[in-house]
Amino acid sequence: MAIDILIAEDEPSILESLDFILRRAGWHVSSVTDGDAALEAVRRLNPRMVVLDVMLPKRSGFDVLKHIRAGIATRAMPVLILTAKGQLQDRRIAEELGADAFVTKPYANADVVGAVRQLLGENGGPA
Image (cartoon, rainbow, N blue to C red; front, side, top):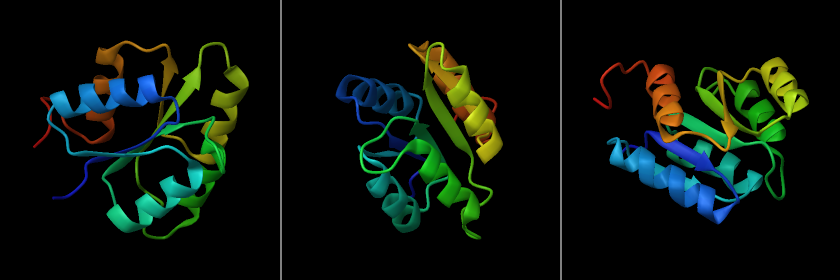
């Protein structure tokens, strides 16, 4: 089964919520809880996109994003960044590193699903 979305999030309640809403919307989801595992999963699973938290153990979301953009096979992979409310600096850095979209925590479920649909080029949901 091909993976649509890789979630990299270390906060269990947020990870569980994201996993639930994205699966309920019909996508195949995999998740990891640190930056090293995120890079390994991107290489191994080749997801259609990544939902990436900025604050991750072992390797930051910024570092993961930098590696995704540096890889020939992953350069064009859509990346949705999760930032904490009020962290404009995080958003600016992520934009400079090539993030495709942002959702601010706390987030509305519809905002996450809408951003994922847009990045995957799906208007009505998963194919």
